[in-house]
Amino acid sequence: MDLTALKASAIQDIERANNTQEVEAARVKYLGRKEGELTAILRGLKDMTPEEKRTLGTAANELRQELEALIEKKLAAFARGPRTRFDVTKPGKKLALGHAHPLTKIDTQIREIFSSLNFSVVEGPELEEERYNFDALNIPGWHPARDMWDTFWVKNEVSAKRMLMRTHTSPMQVRYMEAHKAPFQIIVPGRTFRYEATDASHEINFYQVEGLVVGPDVTLANFKFVIEAFFKRFFGSEVEFRFRPSYFPFVEPGVEVDIRLPGGRWLEVMGAGMVHRNVFDAVKYDFRNVQGFAFGMGLDRLAMIKYGIPDIRLFYSGDLRFTKQF
Ligand code: DAH
Image: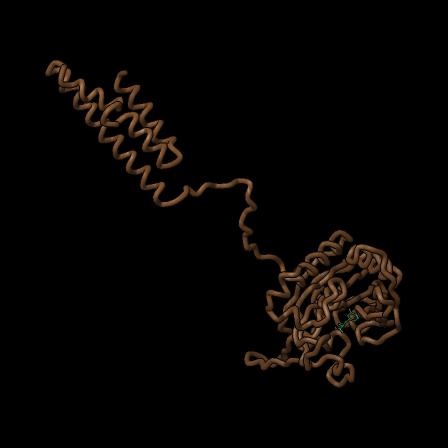
């Protein structure tokens, strides 16, 4: 047998050995003192010419060393324990992926629904001027309705303007109308602030979505259509809702919208109404040419209803046992 073929088969036998016995069998087969194939070649050297001895002898001795090293390596691997194999059928390790906060999910969904109804989504500042949060919304300083919004006032050290953390998203109505002409339809999702004691349904920080539609002949019936379409998409089914007369300084008439919960209880989810003439005056719209409806809803409350969450404070707890459920 020539050396090259012997080398190939010896290496293969050693590599394929599954346990120490098989390695030992391969060793005996090639390097065994009595019957080993390589041993036989090495033994035969003495009968060869000096020339043959030199070439074949060197190669044969090198091969012997190589095989011995290989065997040693193989035995050491077995001593280390079973070879770890990659089992492609095993379930993989779960990657810890981040995900959206429940309020972010609701926010995204609301933006999508109103976008599909042809509303533009706009945003405004959280640190707001008194004029936008109150005065231009028909809530002058003396107005008792200011008590509806417990306010975080912010010290202004750069100008005489009185500043506050916006108590609702309604100021964007004014900002938007100051900068745009009618007709338009917008929603304004955003963060709002109230200087209040917290409990299961009150937070000092929460989220609202404002809506405003203004045009030459916009009516409350249009509002009813829009809000019905919204509820249907948001809750995924027909929802019973009702309008109750209510008061907000920036609308006339004003309403509150309740929806019927699965248990049968009515729950208020938003305020709305027809934009008050004084608001149009404040933004220099001519009330004889335009009319519009506005609405404002609490995003947290919608999320609580949709997911059955009992306490608004959970949203802001940072507790992963809570947020991971969504
Ligand atoms: N801004 C009101 C609040 O935070 C909610 C509201 C009521 C918004 C009536 C409106 C509206 O746009 O028309 O309590």
